[in-house]
Image (cartoon, rainbow, N blue to C red; front, side):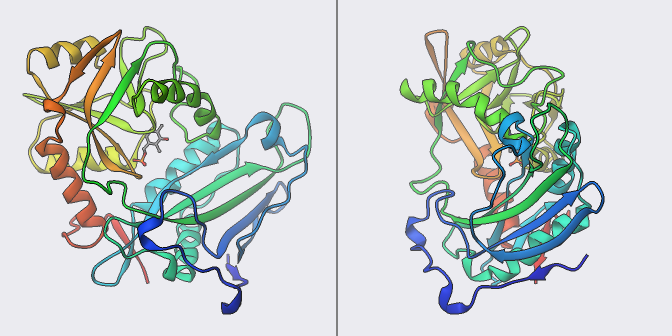
Length: 356
Ligand SMILES: *Cc1c(COP(=O)(O)O)cnc(C)c1O
């Protein structure tokens, strides 16, 4: 399918924000990608148009029953002047897995990747060059059909918007304080926790807000049934470095299959680090911390890449990890993955895709 491009005349384009002041998701580029789905025509009319509000019928099914899924990936401006995407095929497949779970139509991965590339190519000037900065890309699918019956919609909109974002760690690679919640849960077995469904994030806000009020930056989620097994940290996957192995919870259905998680697992294998994907209880971790057997804890996700955890708060008690400092393994993963993303380290697995 040919992607039509309606580009904005140069004089109507926005002034770009100052690179030192980007923040996250506060500025949007000049254009966006759109594509419509109807039952008769399937996905149709892929196009790039000037960034603008979208019109929705107030009865659009997404507004009532939350048929909405999204993705998150980045374009990186390398020191060699090239722009790279990181494993966009995984985002394409995960979007389809999310869509299937919510009875939404899937998109050919090649078309998804072409749409991302075409938009980034047009918005090249928006990919920031400051160290650690990038262009965050947000592909999203919503149900647009106006109807109030609780059933899968017959019409959808897929759009991609892009936002220049600053370095996640402006003041260095700082460990975060995390509150383990045994009050709220993120996902239940058989639910939608393994998808990037918008509804998951609405459900998580209260826990994050309460944690932040108490001085913690995010929550660590436990399993919904027994509140014993560790699942994720905020909107990141989580890893524990024990003396003998690097451990992360398995993709059991309530955990989001992160691209960064997979990349960390692949690198650990290459580096000869013993890696275990297995259920792990909060007690095993807290005991491990007290005995000095848990050396590092870190979260993984596209936004931060690696987010070291310096402290866990559980049932009124604080547990410090690695004296609250970033550990060497977290640092090594961060340097390796960002090095591949910005083209300063070799990419033997072919993870990056050039936007030419
Ligand atoms: C997106 C997300 C992640 C991380 O996935 P990446 O592909 O590594 O960015 C982890 N957990 C949740 C809940 C997420 O939404």
